[in-house]
Amino acid sequence: MDFKYVEVNKEEEIAVVKLNRPEKLNTLNLEGLRELLEVFTVLERDDTVKTVVLTGAGEKAFSAGADIKKMEKMSFQEARVFSILGHEVTKKIENLNKPVIAAINGYALGGGCELALACDLRVASENVRIGQPEINLGIIPGWGGTQRLSRLVGLSKAKMLIYTGKVLNAEEALEIGLVDLVVKKEELMSKVMELAKEITNKSSLILSFVKKALNEGFNMDLNRGCELETELFSLCFSTEDHKEGMEAFLEKRKPEFKGK
Ligand code: CAA
Image 1 (cartoon, rainbow, N blue to C red):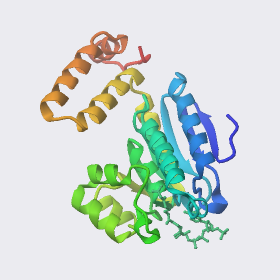
Image 2: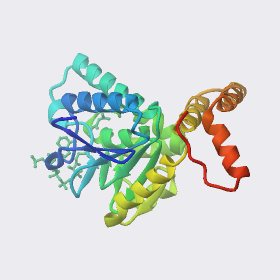
Image 3: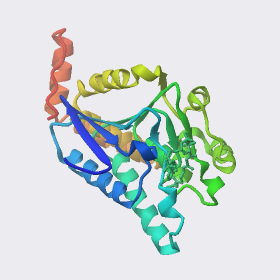
Image 4: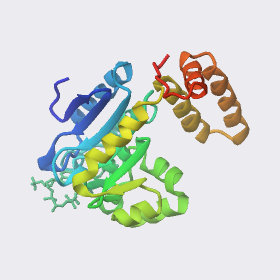
């Protein structure tokens, strides 16, 4: 895949998607968003990819968000299109049929934070600076920040962050659960790849079931969520991987899952 703003590399069964505009701190314009949408659409259909890592090129940033230069002159209609496209991208990441890990290497601001929020897991380097500073630009978050941040850290903490535009450091982000893990800057990619490999060893099919149960169940009432779990739990029993997992346990060996 050959793109201007995004780079994709495969390491065995893990795809590393890199936002690639380091001189502008990996900010995203319409073209960058379209590329990102295409990348994730292709990765969704690629059965050789089991886990995806999203990160930013360069030393400083995961992404400093939407391109303010492009937004400055946007009309109401253009802003709407920009927001809708951002939502398409974040929904595609959130609902991807495989786990997506954000490797947050520095600034994750505005749309950058929103991309990270759409991922399944967030691992940050100790120099992370993360938040939703849109209020300082006279706008609100537009790619899911008002919705996903509160679901992750709670409504009150999301309001505190979004109303003030405060940017958190690693310790603060970890404390409120905005990131799951903080690691040394130079170890970020090795730790994330370690985690990705651990997940990749599981059954990709069963992971897709459990991701659906967790994500869809989170937006349902408890009873409906438990019904969904029952549907997906029983579906596991029609797979080869459930047989392999249980046989391997009983035979005291490591399972070899095929994603079937
Ligand atoms: N849009 C456009 N350009 C940006 C940018 C952005 N969001 N963030 C950084 N840049 C550009 C800078 O203008 C600069 O370009 P030039 O070299 O051509 O001047 C280059 O990237 C490097 O940035 P800085 O020189 O500012 O680097 P710094 O280390 O001094 O500061 C920073 C880093 C604190 C992240 C600062 O760049 C900053 O505050 N950026 C804006 C962050 C922000 O507000 N993001 C939210 C955007 S709105 C949004 O995302 C809406 C949404 O929900 C979709």
